[in-house]
Length: 70
Image (tube, rainbow, N blue to C red; front, side):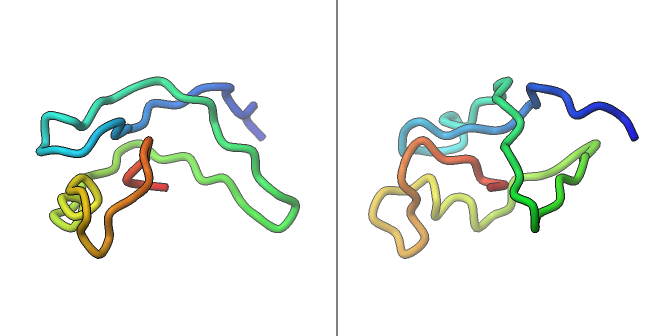
């Protein structure tokens, strides 16, 4: 079994706005519980519904900072 790295690349949103607020950063790999699994990904995407997460006040608006894949 390969070792779990300490960091991963992720898209992070720190403020509300358009696509320009999406930022790729290195963040800590999340801790997993005994009943959870950690899956390694080679690629992921940002969907059209993520615009609602980036927009303040929408029905799917997130608390910030947010990770669209979280």
